[in-house]
Length: 413
Image (tube, rainbow, N blue to C red; front, side, top):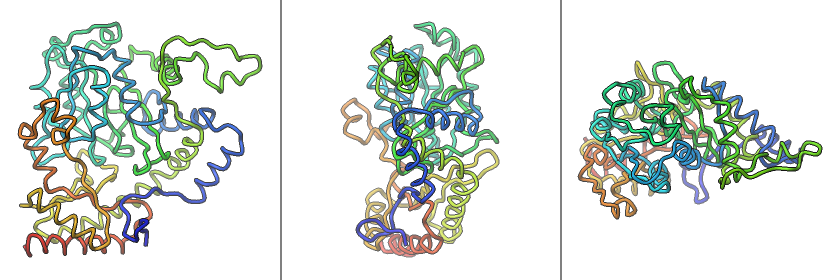
């Protein structure tokens, strides 16, 4: 049984085995542990996997998202649309840039952003839309891209720099932190928006311990290779050469062309990612879907269980989270159910507390009453353990703990 440090069934530990240990050891023995050949190989293989035009590896998804806002020139007086139902990283980057955060509600009975609400929120100051693939389920990208490309919306867009003029419309920046390996209308995430950003944090399906990647799918009038080179410099303090380039004979001299950031991925991180990616479709996703389906099979017997999306006619999840909802359940009751599950030695979580309920965003004037769909999705949501080394027997133990706790709080339904 996979347990955490206090003996409970863990929520989402990483998959660490001898293949990863051997690859990391190889990197350590190579003497090259910062950004180097393994990062470049990881970027190449990610681009092939996502069917995207180029990939830049970075030290976190948050860094990647903020870098793209700054590349697009987002700043004061600009507006960026984000869903109210997401983690703070999707929104804090907007505030870092000094722009105005515009939150919109989800669709009814959906964790993902409402396209109709996006349309209502667009103004001449709107520069970027950040859809978020909650739990690994892709947003409705055809509708979002059709919206921003429509003559009506393009006529409202105001460009303030050359990059914005080149795009000629609102920039769609996908927060794909949860969704690598997912599909929308048979197309892989990473190729669905102008730019998509993945997270490889320790709890993600594919991990590099920390880390992220920017997947480029900009229109053909952009030179993706030149953008990659420019942003690569930006992630390394604005230095014109990275350490790998400087290591060549006599190539020590460099310049700093901008006050850049420190956002690069290391070869140690990439070595984990290379192993993870090599077996992602054949092993990781197969196992995660098997676990997901077992939860679905067991819990579908209970009328109070509202089950998450795995596969539909248009969407295939990455099976990152099993986001159970409990019908006719208040927020307080949900919290008591969670406590009951923990008391039965099972770790669970909630994804996510909507942004307007957090102190940071309350202080900016956001109120959860303005986002009823997001609140209704949150108030009865419980994320169940889902990770590679979880067994089907352990899934049954989790389900038993959840069922007993629900019936203890709500009574038998």
